Length: 203
Length: 121
Length: 138
Image (cartoon, rainbow over all chains, first blue to last red; front, top):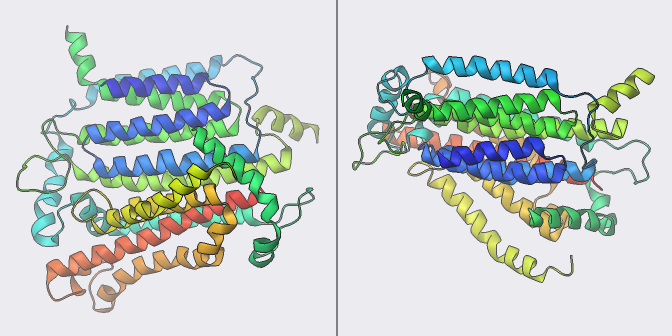
């Protein structure tokens, strides 16, 4: 409960903060808090993923993007009344929706009585694997996971397509294929590397 | 007292809703695309909470089978969210790549300035 | 980067343990929390740490871009390959029970192969994304 409150506080800080570097650092804090909440909710696998992905990889990627773009958010001209209204109405509708949700931690809800018991019962004797999450991930829902892996592959390919083409008409030299840059560009990269590294350290 | 009890019972859901709404607000109200993407990630993680909260059983333990325990939390939401997180970071990377390209084309990542430049052309 | 002696030494000291931890998470995923996704992300994070401290060239000497381009689809193909034998023998796709004589072992093997595919794809994709961003910054 305290963790959840902290999560809300970090969220407010993210909304308030205009310096994007601070926002990135706060989103790292947010991810770690989220991972802690997940451990409390018994989702250890998910917590592990969130800690490594949310606080590790996405922070690095966001910092890299900040390095490539401008790090300051400019103030908007009009006041944000309409978005605020939209958000509040959505929130009100969702709060109304919680009336129909099951009580937190109850064991007799439909999601606990239908499919999950079979997974829990069959995992060890039939599959021989104690971690039910792994069993469901790789076996019962193998097709799902296959799709997810394909999505990851596709996203990676998309990023490579978007970012690896040669840049047009900038002062830096166009990048060739792998061979010549290994020798040539050594002195050029180190400042960029340094800033990214020191920023990550500061985080 | 009644209201307090219901608040405690639904506290997870309320925080989930708060995160979701904040993410939505950031996505709509902020012009900076990196901030928008962070808002989108927050929206996404509120969905993780939304799935994981009902999966918890009070007194249950993590779904790694062991003779010492009998009550386990529901493993199914864990599986779904596990894959969702990894896919989420992949799509975040894709969005950031698009942002970088937009910055190179327009010199800014702020929506207003991009629209202004588009209208000028 | 000349000033960061502590950073360099500590990184060199930490790296094998991070990779070892990733492999532990992968191979122990059947018995504790963990699996291909987490292991992939952790091992990618190890290489990203190496790249942050020692520079991208040093990392690309260890893991060249071409290798990643091979590994990314290879993981998906391994995953699909785990499902194909059952299909050839008339069962449904991704039915692991044909992989070994004992059903239990067959499922363990199937899960292991599938998780390895996930590990390879996730790790190489994350690293490839990181490379793409860094190369853009040159």
